[in-house]
Length: 106
Image (cartoon, rainbow, N blue to C red; front, side, top):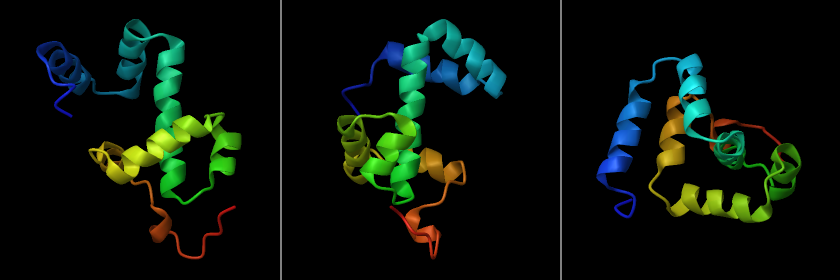
């Protein structure tokens, strides 16, 4: 995490924290990022959500179009990263595989 820290990144995160609605996020990220960059970030979050639910790489690949390299990277972050994905997904109320009794995964 320290490799990210600097004044300009702090300013970016402070700007993001001022956003209050999904519409404001759309407006800000439309100006800040390309469509591809936003879609890539959204795809990674969706991969993390699906991994937490215990879905297979094959299912995630089919459902998101993410490469196995992207899925592996996200899985590594879920297991050994800064816990950012889990923190955000927990706050969004997203269940984990262990929270879904009787769920069958491919």
